[in-house]
Length: 412
Image (cartoon, rainbow, N blue to C red; front, side, top):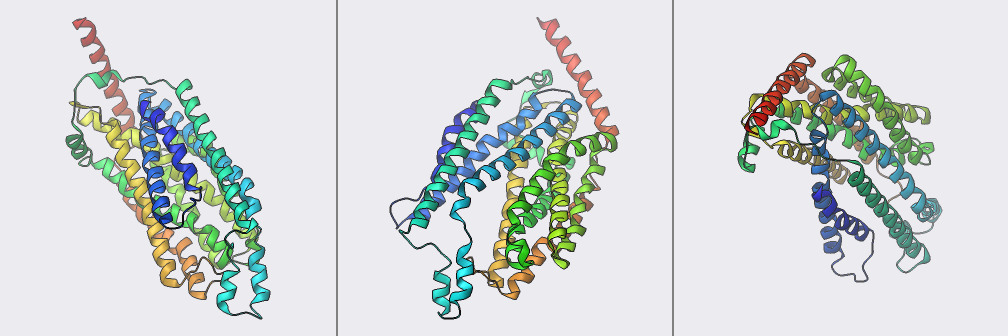
């Protein structure tokens, strides 16, 4: 809890200054690089103890699964609220008229003048208005950060597991080495590293696809399509929670593959109806990809505890490493997208992209995510923790906790 409370004020400041335009021109790249890196670092400082807190809410696996489901529902709902808030606040800065003007101007001016008309000119009212609304949006999101942290501090209390005191605390490097030698953990990391990269690759290029590679009627609907994805994800998390309790977590993981045929359908038949169907199914699959790894991770930690009863206090190492690989998957997705579009000749200033960019976007939201998801699910087939072994582990740990309590009472 101290890590979350201590990082929140600096997290809010770094986020706000990401959207603040400094008065100087030289060194703006350094300005944004510093505050972006600070924001990502502080987000990690907040996120690691926040996710690890699941292990300290209860020793019952069903209760932890339920808490994880609630947490992921609120995270996706928060993303939806944040997207809606920021989208509505900054909407007035994006009228979209400049591309329409370009189509007329292209008849009389050269290509250089055309590109200039796609950007705000320095000192114009449009640019000043855009700066103001983005700072207002940043301030609102910062207030949401603060409100959420206050609710967390008031409403959540840590409960130490009696098993924690039954062994010795392992130093970080030794604990990290032990965690990286645990088979189920490596299997889980490898599978969801690829699956998360696939999901983020598809979603990060979805707007670009709707804007440049799909039919013209999708350009005015991409904001609604993004909201549809988020709403679908929020509504489907309770279903996935029921499904994994009824049929097991490994079986539920294969629901992520539902996005593959629909994404291919969008690439081949880029119509408005198909786009909304894809948005709903994508949200359904995204909910599974968000819920399942964080629901399976406590099972891995419990399995490690049972296999290594002498090592305690390694929950943060397991969770921090998993957060690292989650962010690594985002970096992989971003790197693949950026390099592919760069080679294809993508220009952010152009209103109409070349055919090479269109084909690249089709591959980035169709073929590449499909391959990554299939490989990730194949790796997950070898995940050794089943529902039966999970229940056996829980029973064995309960026996160990009972012995620890009895030993403590005898000493007292």
